[in-house]
Every structure is written in C-alpha cells, then in structure tokens.
Length: 309
Image (cartoon, rainbow, N blue to C red; front, side, top):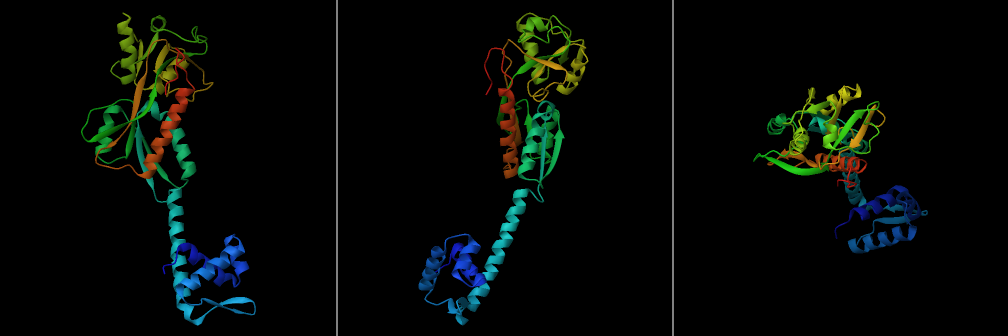
C-alpha cells in the first residue's frame, strides 16, 4: 500500500500528540475522521503502528523505522512548501519589461503596483523605449516583453493584442474649449496645436483625419512624447491630441480632457520573442496591464457614446 500525504499527516499528528483527540486538534479536523483513517491505514499495512499505554498512543517497535522516514518526508514537504512560498512572493525573481512612453506613463505603473502586491519580493526592471528600440530590446535579451502602441512586422517577434484605445483632445483649464463636452477635428484646427509627429502612430491618426477634412496639420510646437505634450498644454501654450492612456490617471492636474467627434481608435500590443515562452510572472503582468488599460478606457467614454473595449 502507498501512503497518501494526507495519511502521512494523520500518522505524524498522532505521533506528535499521542492521542487521537490531540491529533484531530492539530489538524483542525473531527476526531472520528482521524480514528477511521488510522484504522484504515493499519488494516491496509497489516501492522500496528501504535499501541495504547496509559491512555496514550505509543509507536510500536516495528514502526519506528517507518516513523523516521515519515519525519523525513514531512521535512521535505515543509521545504517544498517554503520554496513554493518564496516563489509566490517572487523571491529571487527579476522581471524585465519595456514599454513605449504612452503606456509607460500611467498604465504600466498601475500594473506593476498590482503585481507587487501579489509578489512583494519580485524585482522589476522597467525600461521606457521608443518604438524603434523595442525590437533590439527583445532580440538582445534585455527584457521579456514590451508594451507597444504599434504592430511591427518581424518574423522573430510575436505581437499579442493588449487593449484598444482612442485619442482625446486636451487643453489647459483656463482655455476657452476646456468646458466643451466634445470637439471636432475642424474645431481643433482653429486653435494653436501642440502636435505629435505625424509619423508617430498616434500623430498619424489625427494627421490623417486633418488630411481627409482638408485641414492643415499645423503645429507651432511639436513634441515626441505625450507627457511632454501634456506639460506644454498645462502651461496654456496650445491644445493637443494625445492617447487616452497617457491621461488615464490625470485627475485634477490642470488639464481638461475632451472627447473627439471623429473615429480615433487604435490597438495596442504586447510584444515578445517568438522563440520564447513568457514566464508566469510576465503572463500575470500582461493580464494585469490589459485589465488596467481596459478599465482606463471604460472611464474615458468616446464622444459618440461608444466605450472602447
């Protein structure tokens, strides 16, 4: 007969407590269950493991070697549980990840905070990357994954959909459009625009809308990253169009966030090497980041009333 871990636990509890009642208390179970288990074990083994002396259960001579082995098994189980506990806390684990600035600004920190509440001992190595840096970052093994705003075509990189987003217009609180509930591209064009480069994925969306409407994409001030654009807008140097993720947690920070009438949806991705399998920590991070981004978009309704999923 092979003993199960549960049966080993019962035998050890009786050995330590010296009584069935004491063993039941140690295991936080009912006394009859312990008694039945012991009878079943001894019947199946064909030997007595304990004899009763002065009301206590004393190991028999023939069972002493068995008890010594049980103690060793229990010690190894304890060691295993300790190792699992350390792994669950993230002890000795480093998760290296990258993100383009728009997602890195607010979304990734929220996801990291959630991940570290579950794995408080994990180490995070977080790099903010430009789109053109992401491929080398992954292929050179600098990190396990990158949160991307754009899908590149590369045979060695897997792109997995992350979350859908949209663009919004932002203005300083004292700007005339700050109280608007929505705004069109034509109305945006009537104000000095702090613009993203039209070659940037987000800049290309609004530049494309301007072109289709016959509007000039004139940007007296141009900046590469959304956080820089927000800082310029906050000083009322113009209005701007940015992705909703960049302003996802900017509540009461001197900016008005205004939905845009036109369709400005886009897809974000998580990228990783095609020849690699994401670690369980990386998978949990991606799942958390996707949830954080989806929740952020749900809090930021589109001008047409559609909430991007």
